[in-house]
Image (cartoon, rainbow, N blue to C red; front, side, top):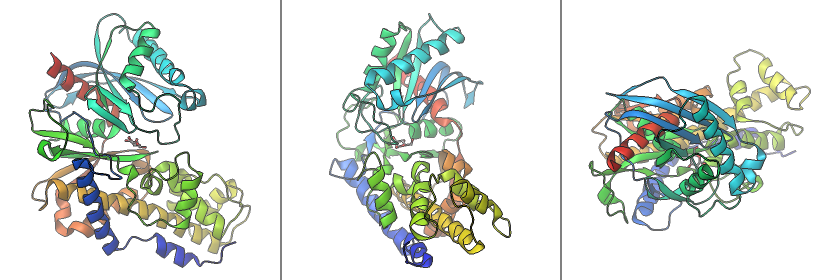
Length: 430
Ligand code: BGC
């Protein structure tokens, strides 16, 4: 068992005010480099989408794929920011789809789309579909783009470097579905931004903090290199930052261990310090190496339970530890475990706050306007202090001006936003 005092480890996980400012600078410089086409850990992908007007109308189908569960929705956009109640079906991918060949994944999705259409009486007439595909995709248009790399443990073969819209279209044809027109492909952050800004015109940032993490924002067209004819009337375009890959962060040996064990070592360094797939793994690595070696299978959900423990003797923490192989624990051990969890989660939230700070300052250096940030994802929604710590981090950076920044939980925005983006794209096409 390692003899490094817990206090020292907790201090190493802390992000001081000056480190926050360094992160803001470094994130800004990586954003600029990415936008100009220079080498950067931030992909800064032009999405060919802009903020919706709120006046998009019609019936649309949305496919939302970004993790082991995917959803299919059909919904009516009524204009003036109003949305009808969607019909939704959810499905779970198996290992065969997540790590098998390309046809396994796309044929499965196409077959479930067919099922959804038939259950909802939507086979036959033509429908526009918005396809949320939440992985790094190098887009070349609103409905074309090649997968750059897999994240979040996915490894289906034969997809990297290919146009995912084409793969889905081909699978739909194989499956006998001929009435869907995929008019938009988008990242879940873009869907989240679209869903919130359909109602709130100040929304210009979309964020996901769930299994994976990422953000997008609205950028002036002239700042984006390589974009010629975008068809954007607003003179702006949403940029998918792919912030999960930001790598100018101080790593502890626990981070290095988690990275080494992952399916994509050396990549998605920020994601591995912030998102739900990894927070629990980092905490487990610290706990296992310092105070409770038998512990196994610690997840971010366990962290949330421990950090919600308000009992005097930390008995809930004891119960969580017991369920993970630590048969008995002293109060001291339970308190140390709690401190470790807090240190790991608040580091994640402060990293998010610094990156958000950089994005806001990039759009609005004096913070003279109001900004709404649409956020979705289980970590943001369910962790007891993550959201609060992001707000505190922004307050530390911006002082009183932080009140001009509103954080809004935008539940299921990635599906609804797909319909809105498909609507905007199909209107442009008509
Ligand atoms: C992906 C992003 C996605 C994020 C949240 C990351 O792993 O690279 O494209 O937006 O997860 O789902």
